[in-house]
Length: 189
Image (tube, rainbow, N blue to C red; front, top):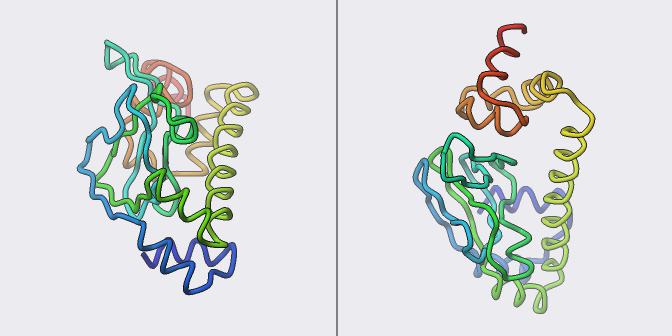
């Protein structure tokens, strides 16, 4: 709980009553490495804060080599299939723990209660939405404006630990190239 408190304290002052109410609705979940904790067509019922671990967002395909990885989330970040969460409709993608992962989750219904019973609830909701929007926007801009090599270099500069944690097949999918093309990029560099 200390991590999410530190994260939120950077943004706003939270009264003890609001904090107590909010944390009473959080559930700690431990997800084993490689586990899919939101499946395709399931309705996302949680927004979660990652205490430790790495989560991959991906579109599954019949051939696992053709899966499309479009996002990663890390320690001290929120994670959700947010479009499914907001609309309470089936998700078009999956969430998978790439490492043993610990998250603090709040359900859709409990978050609605936090919104109505606390002053901090709306702030938490807005900040989560803003973070997820910015990640999506940044990814779209990178795909449109940068070459595959530039996307790889940018990812390597911003998150060098990725290359130690995340299999290259997921990184190649994330930057929008085949594993063979990523191999050629890495050789050139």
